[in-house]
Structures are given as C-alpha cells and as structure tokens.
Image 1 (cartoon, protein in one colour):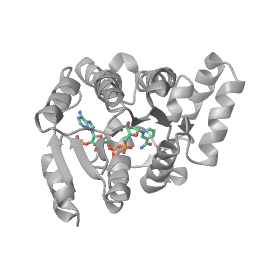
Image 2: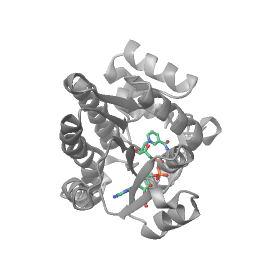
Image 3: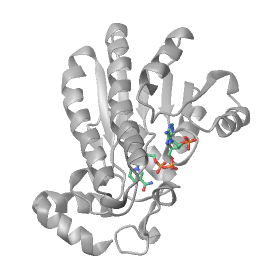
Length: 254
Ligand SMILES: NC(=O)c1ccc[n+]([C@@H]2O[C@H](COP(=O)([O-])OP(=O)(O)OC[C@H]3O[C@@H](n4cnc5c(N)ncnc54)[C@H](OP(=O)(O)O)[C@@H]3O)[C@@H](O)[C@H]2O)c1
C-alpha cells in the first residue's frame, strides 16, 4: 500500500485531495499547522487507521528536515509527495511586512524544494516515486500586487520542470498543478482585492475540481496541468505577450 504525504491538507485544495485519496484507501500523512483540524479530519474518516497527522509550521527554515526526520523516526516511507501548502500576500510590495514575506518565501520555495530533495533521494533508493508540486497560473507572468507570491510560483514551476528531467531515470515522476483562482481561503488569507476582473469569485473553480485535475495529472505522469479553460487561455496569453507588457496590463485588471 502506497503512502502519500500531503502538505496543507487541512483546508482548500489539499483537503479535497485528501478526500479523494482517502476513498482510495492510501496510507496518508497529513501536514499543516492546525492540529485540531487535522485530528477532526482523521477522526471523521472511515480509514482513520491509515492516517497519520503531523502539525507543523512549514514556513520555518528547518521545517522540511524536521518533517523528513519525523518520517524516518516513525519508519514512514513516502511513495508520493504532494507539496501543496502555500499562501500569498496581496498589496504593494514596499508596504509588506518583512517577516510575513520571509515566511511566504520559505514555505512556497525553500520547504517545497527541500522536501523534494529529501524525499526524492529516498524515492531514488526505493526505485520509484511521484511528486506533485502546486504552482499557480501566477507562475507564468509577473503579477503586480502579488509580485513576490507570483515569483515564488515561477520558482516552483521552473524547479519542478528541471527536477522532472533529473529524476526520470530513477523512475520518479514530477508533475505540476497550476491552478488559477480557486474557491478556498486563499484570497482571504492574502487579504486580496477580489472585486477586479482578474480575481472575481464569479469565475473561481471549486477546490474539488482543481484537486481532481491535479491528482489525475500526477498519476498519469503529466508534466503540468492548468485546470479550467479561462486559465489555459490566460497562460497562452502570457506566452504571446512580453512579460513587461503583461505586467502593465495586469496592473490595470486588479
Ligand atoms: N486558491 C487559489 O486561488 C490558488 C490559486 C493558485 C494556486 N494556489 C495554491 O494552492 C495551494 C493551496 O492553497 P489553497 O487555495 O487550498 O489555500 P488554503 O485553503 O488557504 O489552504 C492552504 C493550506 O496550506 C496550509 N498552510 C498554510 N501555511 C502553512 C504553514 N506555515 N505550515 C503548514 N501548512 C500551512 C494550510 O493549513 P493551516 O492553516 O492549518 O496551516 C492549508 O491547509 C497553495 O500553494 C496556493 O498557493 C491557490
């Protein structure tokens, strides 16, 4: 029976991934900061014996190593790693709280890359593995007022594409899920303006739709999936128009 680690499993897209995978009776390792919520999720599952929960703040610099060490102590071998935990900060970059900025950069990039490296090495030893990294459509062009967040997701995309080629020979797949605006707590956490055209809730996909597409892509070994036609068009647009021009256009849409 395969073991799947999901970061950010307490809410939103990660929680929907949990629900899909729980029905398929995998061994699941759920990670987020909210222990109470993780415990509730576990207790409500008919497969609670297959679920392990770790409450941790993954925005701390040593978080990935701590999580990896915890798995080693408990002799948990992770076959599938889903790097989903992440958050954004909306607003003028110059007004941003630097501690919060550092937490976002650490969670979205350093923890994600370190978990890939630590568990990737283990997967290499085991002879197979699968990794799904959650980026965003924000990864494809600069995004004013989400400038640092978009840059973290550009990192996730580029890192994952490179890693995918490096790990192929070890029978390890790396896929990327690039959601567009999705109905979760994301915009509330980011304190984002959702009244403009770009992030208007009227065109948000559900977390369930996004989770399904991401898991399907990962299990079929697809390089990247962008759920939703509108989001696919936005991505195509970013390839046709220079990044500097896209940034100017985006600034007017938010
Ligand atoms: N929703 C969107 O529009 C959208 C679009 C593109 C990409 N994404 C990406 O999708 C991923 C999931 O986000 P979501 O939309 O599902 O948002 P969400 O509902 O806010 O869920 C975020 C998850 O990450 C966990 N998390 C946040 N900070 C953490 C930390 N410091 N340590 C450990 N876990 C932490 C949260 O759990 P706790 O609060 O319990 O720690 C929660 O389970 C993120 O990477 C996000 O960037 C979202």
